[in-house]
Length: 540
Image 1: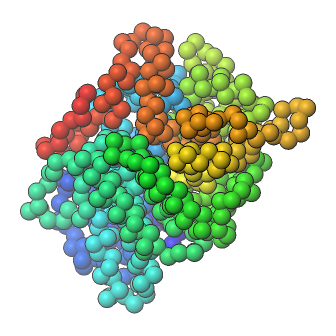
Image 2: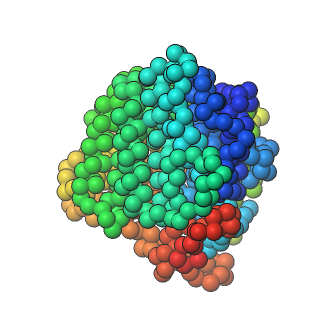
Image 3: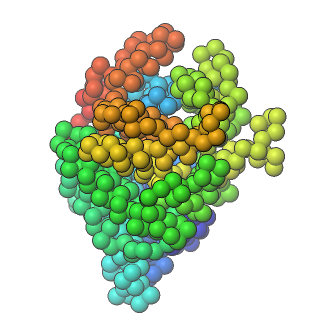
């Protein structure tokens, strides 16, 4: 089933499921506070169409949390939150990729200075719990549908359950990475007599008892060897998620070398799955990737890309402006590329072909800002006239956006890092070079790109640093950098000098990450109000 945004909105608008999801839609509420007392769920899940609608509602919720509610109001009636997508804010907003823009807002300013308050929009986890609620509802009620509708085959039911288990795992994975300990709900809250509040569960326990079991269950249920729909969680996506989880756990206090090996195992499973082109990812060479010339297809047309694994489909005609923190809009973007990164990367512009395809290369300093450093080209075509408007008269305000959750280049670099951490520097360099060589032009008089030699990185630490740098360039704008810094223990080393520089420029008190508790976000005031059993994260 292909849940593009247009189909999702149409389904939600014409089915009873709209009544179900509306009760728990608000991003500003803790989902545990809202008992479902207006609709009998077991009376609703009676047909194959109900499965389709239920999955659509789940994807809609996650899409809004990652990209934003779009034009108008979200499903709960809340006003549009400009630049509301958490995808970039959570994944890069506090990293050395992003800085506050010339037209900053409170969200980007607080993230840039590591001064997040409990009223910052990014500190609200309500949208993730809304999505978890919908996944829990699917898991509980979808199995009953076949007794009412023989069109609901075992394959349809199992695929729907697999997507729901994996989506629940992905939401909890975000919760663990952003806030640490979190409240756990694995059944829908449908009874007003149930206690509406719970205490938080330790983050390590959530990984071990919820996330990994959910993904294991999802993989056992998902139909194998099928050409996937890139907008849906599929066989390859589940493998990618599992590898991501093990890489994260490896960097935690309870992690071990076996976690890196587990990541390698799941990536090898991913390579046997099919890409959107109908052929296996294989994962044996650079030919399995987009070529240098077609690199942007992974973002512009992921459904037709050999790299595509799982992307979010944002249809502008239905949802309005995606309003990413950094876009090709004419003005008013709240975030920009960090100046140090910009000029470091720009020095290699003629060699590294990704720079000009990722960011507006016309940027020049304007005071403490980059004139065009808030304009990311990565997710957009680049046929502009002098006024920075598309030849068709369109701007990024009215174009579709396909945010990448996982793609093959990300997986190659993850595999390279896992190999490095298990002492296999040969294979680590092999997968690093697949990305390194593909991205670069030869330096004259050479006519081909020289791969990184084995003599350049001879220790695990040196290899990992090279891989993390390559990930920063390759995956800029893909919501990965902050999580890379956290899981590898590099936040303080990388970010303290940058935060200090920013604070000197703007004359604010220096905070940095002296208190490593502040690697986690604070719990929002909304969450604290909704659940009186919650305790605030240390440092806030």
